[in-house]
Image (cartoon, rainbow, N blue to C red; front, side, top):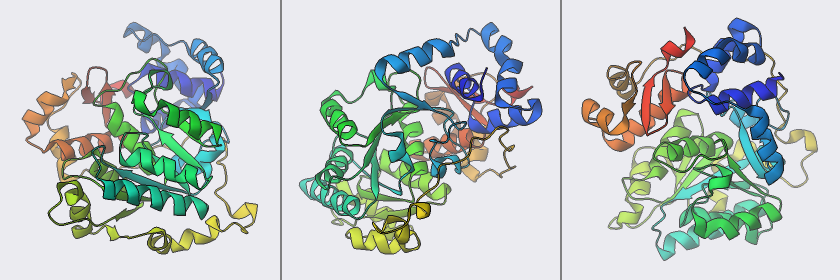
Length: 369
C-alpha cells in the first residue's frame, strides 16, 4: 500500500482526523503502516473500506484525489493545524495552491450584498487572487461569478461529495468554474450527502485554503460567522463589509467588525490588509514567489498539546466514547449552536473529537488505544 492509498483508506474509514493519523504514523513509522495497524479493527467495527474502488470511481468521474502525500496538496491547507486526509478535485488542483481569499456570506442576500460580493471578487481575481467560497446560493455564488467575470481563478468547496452535488441550482456554475480553469473540491468520499456536520467541515477547508476571509453579508446566526471564527483560529485575517445598522442581513458582519475583524470596503482595502502578501499576487512576480507545492510527507509530525478554550472544555466534559447526537450535546452543554459548532470543529482539528454519521460525535481517545 502506498502512502496516498493509506490516506484515502483513513478518509473512507471515518473518525480519523489528520492529528490522529499523524500520531499513529509517528508510532508506526508511516501512514501505510498506521493503516495496517487499525485495518482489522475498522473491519470489525463494520467499516467497509475499499480504496481501490474509490479510486476507480474517481477515474470514472474525472476527479483527482489529492492527499498530503501528493505534491499538489495545497501548502496553505497542509500548514493548518488540521487538514483533510483527501481532497476530491474536479478541475485544476493547481487552483488550490494559488494565493487565495475567501468571500463568504448569507444565502438570503440583499441586492447590496450580491453586488458587493461580485464586484469585490472580480477586482480581487483581476489582481491575481483566487477567490474561494462555498458554492452556496447567495453571496457565495456571486463571489464565484465575479471571479469568472475577470477570467480569474475560483475554487468552490462543497459541503457534500462531488457525486452528491448540492445545491442543484449551482450545478451549471460549478461546470463553468471547472471549464475556466478553477476547481470544485470536496473532502468527502463519494456517496456522502450534505448534512449538519458536512457544512462546518466545508467551512474549515474554506478558511484553511485562504490568507484571509471576507464576510460580505451575514445575519447573527450564520455559517459565515463559523467560517470567520475558524479562520481566526487558524491565524487567517478576518475582514468584513459593513452594512446598515438596522439590517438583519448585515448584523453578523457588523458584529465581526465590533469584535475586531478588519473593516474593508473594496479590493484595495483587502490588498492593504494582506499587504505582506501583495508581491505574491503581482503579475510580474517570479514563479518562485508563488506558494510552493508541499513536499510529500512520509511521517507527519505528532500534534502539539494545545490547551482547550472554555467552550471546548465544556464540550469535552459532556462527551465520552459513546456517540452522542449534536442535539443532545446542545442541551447538555447549554452552549449557543454557533459556539458549539465552532468548539466541535476545533476539537476535531485537535484530534480530540470524532465526527460520526447521523450528526453524532464521540471522544477520540479510544481510537488510538
